[in-house]
Amino acid sequence: MFKKLKPILITLIVIIFMIVVGNFILNTLFGDMCGNDIKQKVSSPNGENVAYIFERSCGATTGFSPQLSILDKDDKFKNKSGNTFRTNRDFSIEWLDNKQLKVIYHKSSETYKMEKESNGIQIEYVSK
View 1: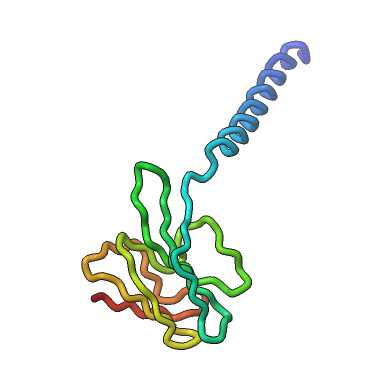
View 2: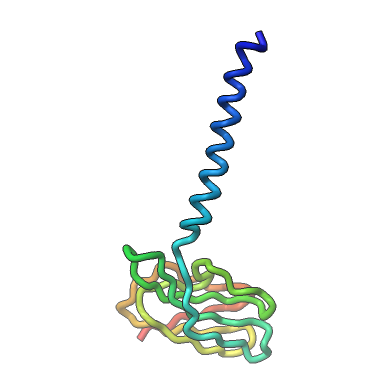
């Protein structure tokens, strides 16, 4: 009975190995096609939080997306989408105090994410 199962087990092991190695090679070669280009880094008045305005692009078939992430001062900015605000047009920000941030964006902007609170910071949105 073991002689009948042995070729099947070997085949399964080879297939699983090929899937794991293939996945590793594809991720190494092509990885994350998206990238972030930081345009502005603005610390809160007390320096405890940092607002990053950046453009995110995910290759030739997508456009640039202006985005906002708010992080603790000790957090590393990573290659991820904005955790607070995402839109299709440039915008600006203004710290009102240590826990409040104002986002000023164009009234004809398409918005894809508008968090009212991020990382303990209250967000006010103003369209112009």
